[in-house]
Structures are given as C-alpha cells and as structure tokens.
Image (cartoon, rainbow, N blue to C red; front, top):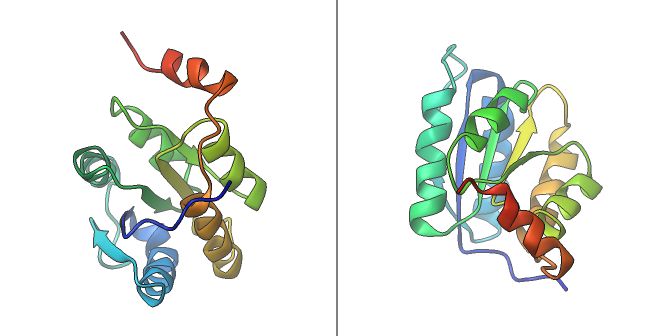
Length: 148
C-alpha cells in the first residue's frame, strides 16, 4: 500500500550532488512539499560528513524523510548511517527506492549526482516518499539494526 507524500522533506548534499539536489528540490516544491535544505548551496567543494549529520538530525527531530546527495551517494549514506536512528539507503533504481522503504524502513535516501539521471531520480524520490514499510517479518530485522 502506498502512503501519501509527506508535507516536508530534508535535503542535503555535497558539491558533486548539488545540481541533482536542486532538481529534486524544484520537483518537491512543484508537488507542494516544503523542503528544509541543509546545504550545500553551490558547487564549491565541501566535505560532506557534517552536512549529512545536520540533515539526519532534522530527520530524527522532526520525523520527516531525508534525501541526501553526493557524487556517488556512497560516502553520504555511510556518514548518515553513523547517526543512531538513521537508516540510509543508497539507491540507483526504482526497485531500490521501493525496497528500502518496504523492507528496511529507510528514513533517508542517498542518490549519486554522477550516477542517476535527474528524470529517474525524480521518479525514485516519488517512490521513496510514497512507499510504506511492510513491517511483519521485516520489523524484527529493522529493530536488530539499531545498537543496544
């Protein structure tokens, strides 16, 4: 079952994902979704870990999904997953976007600006934001991910 799109989404990127973040931000605004943009705000080189931590703090504090970006999205997802309570999934396909929500209750999607074309990324974000966690047999696994 698909859920309604959230009213708010947090975005964050490094310089390599900036253009894709801006494309997704425009799409979300067109959908009437409020965006909290944690940066970066240009293609000027930056280090991403602190930016990802800020975005993840918003995800947890405000209970909203996040979409993070980088060149590949790999480092950003690793940084995000260091934050307790975050389940970030680097996605490259519509199936990844669906399964990370259905089976893993991902609360953050990571996209690579050098890996995914903007048209596909828009569709992936829509799938991520409207797919429910199935729970059931997956719930115990998700609980087991969190440190004690």
